[in-house]
Image (tube, rainbow, N blue to C red):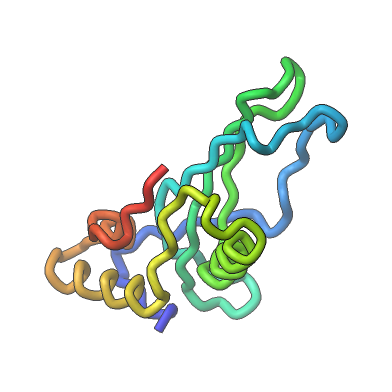
Length: 136
């Protein structure tokens, strides 16, 4: 259950809207962007009030010009990340070089297992579970 987060877990607040970017659409090259899933965090869903887990995704533009946006972070729920993964596999198949996401059940079970063993552990400890360590 996504709503089961220990009282000591830190809750992040990701903005509802996307940040404003300065990116020249004519010269951008997303093949040169570096994308890293830096952590998994609990977040309060502003619509339901429930606690959900989100991936914090850091994006860095290596080709950005001086006055353009060079880096930002976004939060995405597992379901959004899963849809992206399926579309990438559908269109790019074997040419992809990334570790597939663990099943949602693995994420939640690993989170509960770690929390039950370490008093006061936060969900960021989930990244210590080998199956959840995403490669860059």
